[in-house]
Image (tube, rainbow, N blue to C red):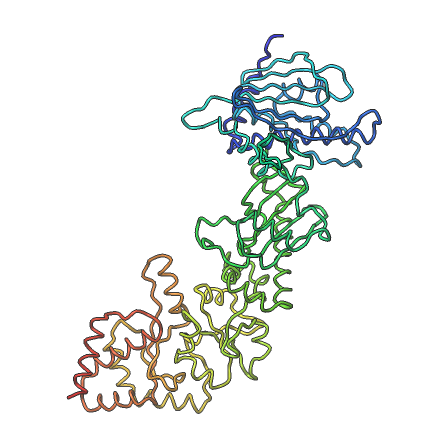
Length: 619
């Protein structure tokens, strides 16, 4: 029989199949194994209604011959006759699986992986010639389909049993691609484990083993797991089963902090096995960290890092999602953006959020361990996308506070606010210890108000987006006016400011463009001085933004001086005596910078001034 040429449009499609549609040549084996699984499904399904058809010992076999440069995939599924070979393999992008499903009664359900009819042709990425020997169940004749990129021929052949044998004649190596890598049994086994480990039928390979006497032998071995752990009933699984799967999947020898195993049935059904790690990966905040979940469809591996099905603020989650309802593109590599994906993502996010809520409520110590590792990601989620998800995350946030020096939720903070307290007070710094030393806290703590300690760079951005909790606004102790003074205290500070108006203006003139204002403080008690910013940009935000952009963002600097401190009184006396106080003004400002955790403008000048004052005091 003469070779039939593929039509021009089919040749174009075939060229796309082999060179463009699939981005990874490794997946050719996934496609062939998936097709074999479909053939076994069809035979099994027909055996349920046709007593003349048996479905015993259904399996797939994969083997390679390095000498002959061939890879062979064999199944004892339903097989094909001449017409089906012509239709399914002679017409590109026609799917026998799709036709089979179309002919079923609407009430009859069967899971078939391949629907586009193009997966078979992915084999041309690694093979220059393909042979398909097949015999359909219930029929006497067998046929051999032989094809290249140009065309194909079909001949009658001999085959004793039902099913299909696909033989790939592997291409010669090129400078860019080493095709002979697929002629190694170990490599093929690895591809089966990666892409087809959970195909429901056994995949057999001849592997080297050793008998009880230590002698090497070749033995036919099942190389796939068949039933994935996430599809097993929870009652059949123990904690060590979950832990072992996690360790093998992610090479993490720390037990996961929490395991989430569940199944959803509805318009979009899926099974999920999710893990919350105990320890943050070392590269968690780098571009090297692989976020996203492993995605399967009907047990066939689709994607290793499916970012589309879990929100970025839950990027610490690891695990697997398997759905029969996914809409995939033609190459079965990239997900189509559709309603199903959105529904699945919303469902997965909700499940993770609910799990964290229950952990916070019932396993507080465990939750605090989790938050120390991954809490920063939740905080990021509150202000990402202009606070779109802040309501879902706000009750999961916890902060160290001045009340018990332990973690507190915003709900707990508000529930124990003092009578008449209007704001949620917070202070920012590099550590809890640093914040405790801030002079701005003195008055607030004396009044018995609780202060939240913001130690993460994202905290103030988060507070700005959240703005308020339960109607109580966030208030920084390092910004603006705290409005904590009584009328008498306000009158007193106003009088002192007026009495020292000339001195304050002198200090402001001495500092020139370094500060926007110099004023007497009502928030200081024991400390002589502090810096605050206005209500827009804080010093913490200044440091964060400059670290990110390496820019020169600068918050306003307001120098506040304690009017009751001995240092200020001495400064006032020196000024009245006509002494030049510019050096003192600079030292006060530099001191305030250091207290605020900001760099001194000129360390050498600061050192000179301190030395001069020391020498002056020693005379």
